Image (cartoon, rainbow, N blue to C red; front, side, top):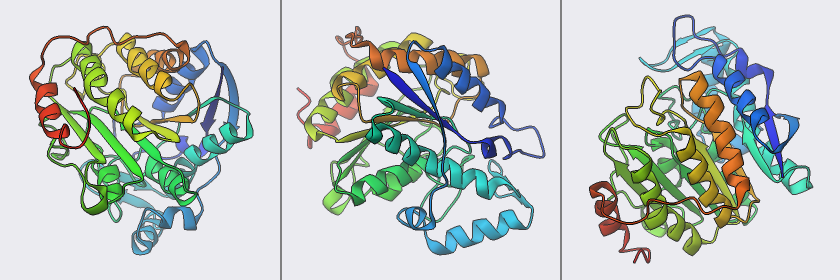
Length: 333
């Protein structure tokens, strides 16, 4: 199998004037991970998302404010999030990286894509930056696919809930959003009862997980919730918000995942998607070694074709509570 490694030099120019965990070195670590996998690497430079593509997700006034803020040299947006002069370009190319990967897969140049760009995106809402994120990269890709009549599933295994992605697609029946996240934790959203609204009811699937949990809980969540829901939804494309801050070595996440757990989750997704039409997006993750090794495991797992959910039995309060809510919308027997 071939993986499209999509990145852009502008990702390295979004640099905080102070010490910040979301730093350029994360890109190099993820690139090393893609290259260390057993897949053949196809190198593709990201294109910038167009204004029209961005407007499918973000308000025009928001984009104008962000561009003007960056043009003026940037600064601190909130206690977590910053921008500098070059951040506008970095954000546009980060938002376009997933689109570039999709185009490479559609041309037949690759089987799977990995968008190794920054700033990350899943906290960015329609009209607000937050949580290190400027624009919502995965949402830009999903909106473009939906605009072409495709059904899209987003699986978000970042340790933080992707409040921005949820907000953008909360009313949509064409985008399934599935999030597994540490709860209670930043940003405070992602309760199991948040299931969507209007025509989108049931298409938001939240699995809040107690802090300190490890692979057995996540594998049970995939077996009991994620895989059955994906099978029933039947996506044409799968987009994965691949944060690696759930790794036991991460300084911020408070979870206990290890490299093999990311490989197991990706293997399950590969089986669902028949090893095609899937793009992974670098979100969080702040231990460089964990990023590198987990990215490699993700791609190898996705391509493996091996059943890997070996912790399916038993009971887990986090999973049982989510199943009780989600069974109203999905067959989770």
